[in-house]
Structures are given as structure tokens and as C-alpha cells.
Amino acid sequence: MDVVISIPDQVADKLRCRAKAHGQRLRTYTSKIVLQAVQGPMAPVQRDFARSGMTEKQWLDLGRDLLDKVRSEKKG
Image 1 (cartoon, one colour):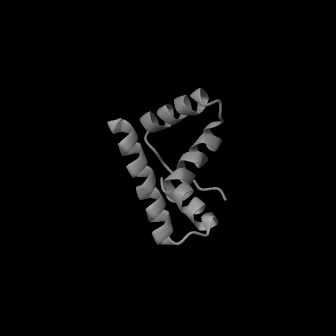
Image 2 (cartoon, rainbow, N blue to C red):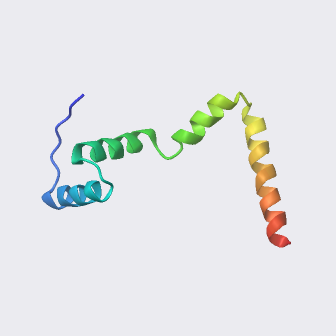
């Protein structure tokens, strides 16, 4: 789907620079940014949780166990 939006010239310039720095076309880079914004930063975690088949309690317990392990290792 194509969508046309208006953005300030300064923003467009920054997008062009960032796209070039990532070796991507402006359209590809902008699409990637929009997709990330819609999915949010938790999308990969939510996907992994759904695939795991674990209950919410099991998932939280795993996280707590890992956190406790890291903390005990830091204490030495």
C-alpha cells in the first residue's frame, strides 16, 4: 500500500541521510521506521512469548530467575 505524507524538508533530509547510511532507498528505510513504530518495541518479545507456549506465570518466573542469577553473579 502506498501512502503519501507531508514532512518538513529538514526531516526529509535527515531521513535521506539515514537511509543512505544504512544502504537503503529512502522508501525502504521509511517503511521500516513506520513498521517499527506500529509494532512497538515489545513486538519481538510478544511474538516469542506466543511461540513459547508458556503461561504468563511461567514466563514471568523465568524472567525473575534470570534476573536473580545475574544479580547473584554480579555480587560474586
